[in-house]
Structure formats: structure tokens, C-alpha cells
Amino acid sequence: MKQRQLGSDGPLVSAIGLGCLSFGGIFGATSQDESLRCLDAAWDHGITFLDTANIYGNGVSESVIGAWLKTRPHRPVIATKASIVAGPDRRIDNSANHLRSELEASLRRLCVDHVDLFYIHRRERSRPVEEVVQTLKSLIEEGKIGGYGLSEVAPHTLEQAHAVHPVRAVQNEYSLWTRQPEIGLIERCRMSGTAFIPFSPLARGALGEVTLDPTGLPPGEFRRQIPRFQPENWPHNRARIETFRNYAADRGVSPAALALAWVLDRGPHLIPIPGTRSAEHLAHWATASEITLTDEDRHEIDARLPAGWAWGDRYSDDQAATVERYC
Image 1 (cartoon, rainbow, N blue to C red):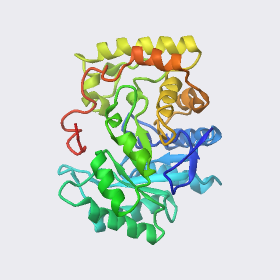
Image 2: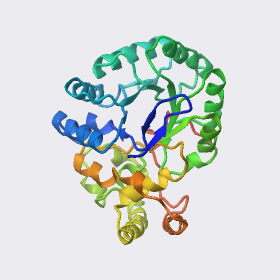
Image 3: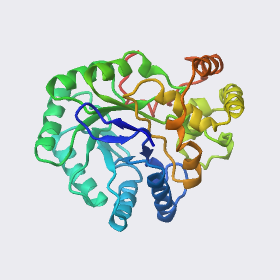
Image 4: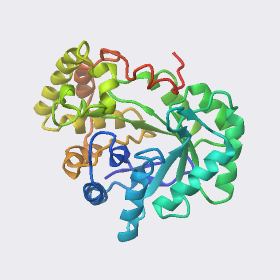
């Protein structure tokens, strides 16, 4: 596995990380044993960067990683997040008290005394980001975190935060079907020495090895709410994706690996974090950093999946309520 630097002041990590959202059961029932096998497979493939959050399964994802660390000698670079307060009155809290208490709880679940990267999961609109960065800067000075990050933010928020203390990473959705970060954010990260961490780089499974059937998803599953998977949009999206699958097959690689290679090709400061709880699924894309795209590849991929090709929004209105929009 090739390596990339996690921000200008951060450690070297695998060029591809592992998103651990599904360890918490959001994409269907799972088990700790299945997740532990996935973590073992990730490490065996050279993946040294794990991404989780306090809200993933209400602490389950972090606890699984903690159980893994207690029984293995491995020492990955870990990123976690806080800010989202779950429940019927779901809200965002970037206050110092909340971030501190949630970080302490995360460290206990992870069985570590610090994490290399700590994100605010969403920006609290009523609280100045400069105030939030002062809290995060204090956590760095206390040795609780190595650096801080921002998630689902606009370029201007990165600029504001970075002026107070350097931002180690920004995490936003980015893939062949979600291209908004190309409008300023990826470039702003490059200019500031900030790593850009694309989450859902495989289009929430749409660009995976197996053709997705949204009607077969469990009731209440997260993707059932996403407009792109709705009956009026999915057939159009699937038809486009099939042309990409065919090209990947002609090239002799999996569609997931080719989709990740495309993300990696967008800049050396991009570190995608595809998510899975399956060691078998991970094997389909774990070697993507070894794929070198040619000009012909770029042209052929763009011809099949040009910017803006996807039908439907990436979130429902409810899901997008806490995302910072800028276009």
C-alpha cells in the first residue's frame, strides 16, 4: 500500500483508509467478529488509517476498534468525530464541554490515550468556528489529539478555521457521483496543506463489485432515504454505472478499485476512506493505490461518468439539514 501524508504536520498513512461506519450497523446487522476480521484484513493489506465517530452505532464502532487494539499489536492512525447529538431533538453541539466530554468517552471506548485526528462532525451554525478551533487547539496542546479536522464544510469555513490554527484534514463526501468539493474545497485544502478525506468514495456502494438493488435494502436502512436510490432516479444511475463497470472489466480491474484510483488521481493530498465491514468486499479495492490512470483512462471515465451525471441529490432534505452548503 502506498502512503500519503495526513496534512502538512501529520503522520504518513496508507493512501487508502478504512471507514468504520458500518461497524455500527447502519447498513444492516453485523457482528463484532465480522468487523474484527475486516480490521485484520485491512491491516494485512497495509491500511493503517481508520476513521470512526462517536455516533457510529452509538459507540459500537469505536468499541470494536478498541477490542481489536487490545488483542493486536497494531498501532494504526485513528480519526474520530463528535458534534452530533442523537435523539428526537437531533442537534449539533460544538461547545467546549460537549467536545471534551465526547472525546474522553471516545478514548475510553478506543482504549487509547489520544487520537491522531479529531473532527467536528458538523459545524454548529450559531457558534463562531474561531471559538471551536480554540477548544480544539487546547486539546492538541494537552496531548489528547494530534490534530483537528472539519467535516461537511464549505471552503470559507476551512479558511476561517485555518487562520486560527492549521486544519489537519477536511472530510466531505466525494466520488465519481458527488463532485461538489471540486468547487473550491479540494484546491483550498491543497493550498493550506490540509489533507482532503473523501468519504463514500464508492458512492455508498453503488460503485462496488456487486450491482446494488435498493429494493433489497433492509427497512429503515440509511440509503433508502437518499434520492439517488429512489425508483425515479436509480434506473438512470444504474445504466450509467454499468458503462463504467464494463470499462473496468475491459481494463481488468474491479469497478471499486477503478473508482478509488480515480479519486486518488485527483491529487496527492486526497486520502479516501471507503467503508465496509466485510473482509471480502475490502479485497475488491484494497490494491487501488497500485493502479496508475492514463490519459485514455481519464478520458474514458469522464465520457461515461462526467461531472453532474447522477440523477437525484446525494442526501434527502432531512439528511442534508446539518451539511454546510455553499453552491
